[in-house]
Length: 152
Image 1 (cartoon, rainbow, N blue to C red):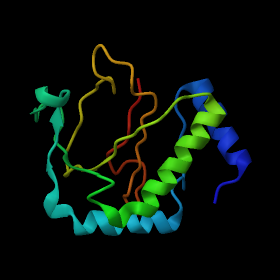
Image 2: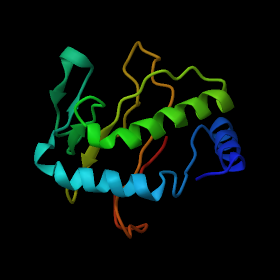
Image 3: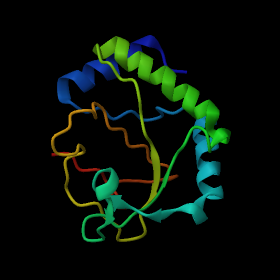
Image 4: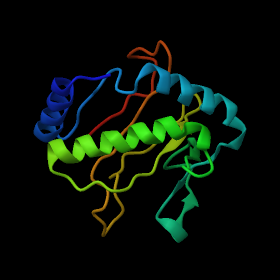
């Protein structure tokens, strides 16, 4: 488990730089649960789409990943992960004076050469996304393997 000092340092970094990199953020047992879930649900991955709600469409020139949207009701095997996310939201709210109340998560698989073109992680005319989180499940990944997140 992370110490209160860890959380405060991460919150300070996020407030100062508008991003933070946290190695080992997810506890090992939850990481193992998520990795197992991902392996078991690879056949449910679907071509990712872009756009909001009823405007969603495939756009391979924009993104080429396959995704699986997590659902608390359907994916009951991930209930420990959802509980941990709820606890994390409360911590971020307290430390950063936010009002995070909801969330959505998906698993994404990028095949070799896959991409997601530069974009703003927010739909035009909306301001409801306060924090975006990317968690890599690649074991033994190292710089140069590809897939590095680029922030602008």
